[in-house]
Amino acid sequence: MSAAGLPFKNLTRKPGRTWALVLLTAFLSLSLFAGSVVVMSLQSGLRSLEARLGADIIVVPAAAKTKTDFQNILLQGTTGAFYMDAGLLDQIAAAEGVEKAAPQTFLATLKADCCSSRLQVIGIDQQADFTVQPWIAQSSSRELGPLEVAVGSDISAGVGDTLRIYRQSCPVVARLSPTGTGLDTAVYCSMETMKTLLEAAEEMGVSHKVTSDNAEEVISAVYVKVAEGASVDQVATSLMSHPRWKVAVVQTRSMITDVSDGLAGVASAVKVLIGAVWALSFVILLVVFALLTNERKREFAVLRLIGASRRSLRRLILTETGLVCLLGGCLGIAVGAAVIFLFTALIESALGLPYLTPDGGKIALVAVLSLLGTALMGALASARTAWHLSRVDTGSILREGN
Amino acid sequence: MSLQAEAISKRYFRVTGQANYFEAVKPLSLTLTPGSVTVLMGRSGSGKTTLLHMLSGLLTPTSGRVLMDDTDLYGLKDASLSLLRNERIAVVPQGRSAVDTLTVMENVLLPRQLYGKMAPAGEAEKWLEALGIESLRDAPARELSGGELRRTAIARALVQQPQALLADEPTGDLDDENTRLTLSVLRDQAKRENRIVFIVTHEAEALAFADDAWKMEAGALLPIA
Image (cartoon, rainbow over all chains, first blue to last red):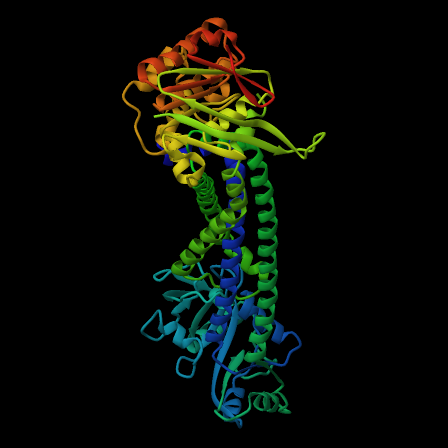
């Protein structure tokens, strides 16, 4: 055994005391790591949502629940469909202040023999689209052909697999990068494919007609980019108030603001929780170390007796604390990572907000910072003990309890 | 080489009849020389242990100096005094003085390992055997009896190979046979290794091993005729 081995021996030969401290510090690092990753995932999800929406206004049919359904499809990955006459697209595109307009058509599949699973299918006009197409382009260099589909990152099928949608075999040709939004659970196809799928659905009794004598072609939403210099509010108001269109509008800015407000609330709650855990743990650590001061003062008096300097005793305590924090910190981060990554879907659905886990580099950085934070907390909590124990009155203590 | 107390005293704050302090050790001078065994006797509370702690660099005197050769112990900074205590002065204290998480052998080797030094080959084993505790070398210190702990502390002090060995009640928990064995070992240290040996004890038997004998009465140091 060397002098450097003494802290290790002290820890391994007092396993009860050591594990109690390890678990406490593990709790600290778990709360910091998991809390930080959740907050970062929410922020990342919001940024991703902003990037994916790309439009200023989204026009949807004016039915009572349409706006809510639309937001749920976008944010929570629920399935749904609503339709309006496709002819509205040209009229919206021609409206004053509109620079670009791109349609999307939705179709919800069934959990039945006809379909692989319950999915949200979104048809896009590959020439006009300016929101989803750039995202698809990151994964596939070519346009989607007849019946070909691109799948969101949360869909279990991969490139080369075939999805069954209303008895149609749809080969998966691209798998999209995650966005942390409901878009990750959707399947994307061209408008031509969507038309085929709508007809197949119609044959199975799933209606998509706007009214009984409606036109053949339907769309679900129109993504609008407002011309430079035009007011988004004014364009939105003019679209919504058109007497014959019967549409509702979703302003992406307000939707992002709503999400952002929700995120701020959750982030604040998480931060308060982390703060509370840390404050409580710090107090517990202080108490534990204070108790240890009393328990170990004789041991430290012996070390002083045989020539240990005050500085070396402080180093001994801090090394022991460092080892405990390292072990506890790693344990907490490992448990935190397991919980965060195993239950991502659950957390995402519980929060009801865009949730995009940051990349490995950022998570590694958070892990290192959590470890450092835990070590700093341990060092602060044990500093008083280290100081007291290094100044024990060796003579008096050795005379006690003879 | 000598260990010398020059007019040292120790007062503690305590309100007594006439004063607001208690004088545990009244001003005294004492010179301990290599090759001789000095025994200090006295009743409990007479100031023996306080004197030993001052001589060993563990307790700062209220007045006076303690010199190891020409070095004033209490003029040294903590790191230097600690090193001196590790290399030149070994103390066998009263009571339990082992690190509970270590074995007997680890405790015995600890002073040398604190400063990254190796004990001479077989040195630790030699003293464990001489003190009759070689069978306990791998036993955890927390499982030892009072007498075994005392002998472990003596072995630890001997492995330090100090210039001065100061022992406080080294035979306190020992039977007669082990008392004689321990006192013989300490006397050998003085005579064969030319070390300063200072023993604080209640055992009258220790006087038979002493070159100088003193007693303390109410903090005053008096020679034993």
